Length: 349
Image (cartoon, rainbow, N blue to C red; front, side, top):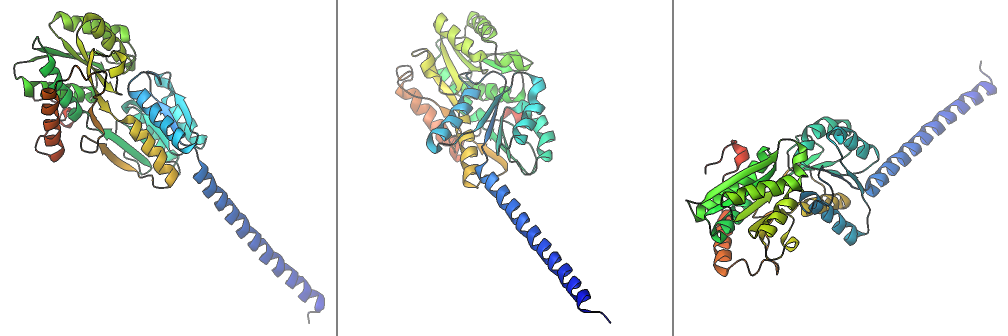
């Protein structure tokens, strides 16, 4: 029959098992707490697309949104500027591996890369501006650029004295044709006989950062009679606006309010609030309310619009502004529908 020693060894083994189980639970709880705390303290990340942070347009607007978040919250964020096409995948992966959450990626050209990378980091939230990526951890932010472009197209036609206006796009992609088509629709709504000259800068990402080519295209359009030019070309647009000012015609800026770049020469700017998109992504993540899925920033939500300030006040008459505001109200209400080129790759005008 078993003696006292056998019973004692059994008790010891049971006690050890209980202690090990308890210790494991404590460690698991501590790890979970650490992960939760890490998520709460995670810095957001911003990946700036080709063309540079200070392109005075799309990228710079995004940067300003991030800076506004920093100023208001005292927080910090991680930032990377793409220098080449080859860096896209590596940059997104590195940002996720550094612990950034959310990772905000700028530009439609990153869509296929993010489609591939996002599933490998299921605990990381991503946001992409200007394209839809159908992944459960991705917020896709798109804008109704055609609506804002319609309004500035109206203004261009009303300001034109020659009956010819023009458009300089950056990279020849459906997104930029969406700008061009909205612009043409707005101009034709004011003057069905107006001529709209259109040129794209190129077919590669280099088209976003070629101000010399932008200037050359603008001069060619002026030779065809254009006296108002709308640039939707990133850094290339800087050359368009400069040439317009030098040649004495009116220009229309894009994305950021570019009116102050050449006061008295820029009729208005078609604002695309990329700054708000970045700011909202950072803010919602900090509050724990970040939502994935598609978000559309349209005229009704003030995602797009046109800029008025002291720099263009003398260029826009009260009649022009009243007509544009009336059209804007009809677009918001649904009474006026502006065709979106990207829905069928065609433009009705």
